[in-house]
Image (cartoon, rainbow, N blue to C red; front, top):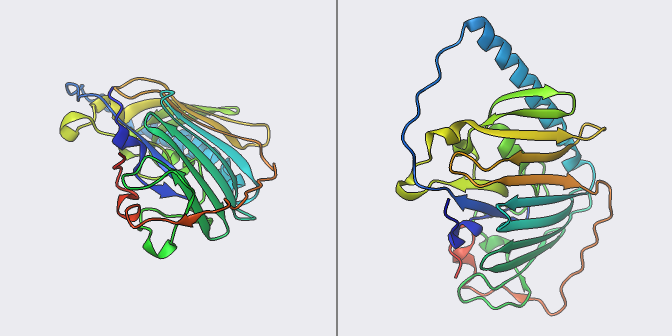
Length: 261
């Protein structure tokens, strides 16, 4: 598995930079699983639908209260976010091999500090929303405001089964759409290994049914990756950076393109 610096910067949604990783070279095609009886397939589909329903219900807190989200990809790319969509406050810190990115959001104001882009200094800057690319979907609006990106993971689930608060199954890593949180890119040749289409995962809900962890172990040519939620209801205080300057022209063409220094 090869990490690339380009994989650290691919876009922002709800103020969180997309965390991505390039997987290793494609492997030989694996045999397709044999077909199963219709009755068994129906039972599996029902079990999966029920488990996915629990996961979706477990993310309702995103629009209801403040929370912390932590994303980790192979301990090489990490992010820590504190989000309050009700009061429109957000802080993010992304750490990657090439450096650190900090983001603060207050209502519609977006501040960024990073040295990872070409032609951009390391001081705090203010982004002009009118110049931000469409895939830089900075918003507190429902559907675009999960700093952990759990919805994209849930959308890519193939099979799932709930055992109390624990949910496990398989996920198609090739179907995890671009956005904030965990994301993977194909390796050399632009091809994922076949096994990436049924990568294992396990998730946990707390006693109130909230999603608190979504884990993907290292396998199928993919690195280990984790998403965790915590600190529900904690006040999120965001200060406007003193002396922030208007973002330079050189910044905007690089947003969402995954082209760091």
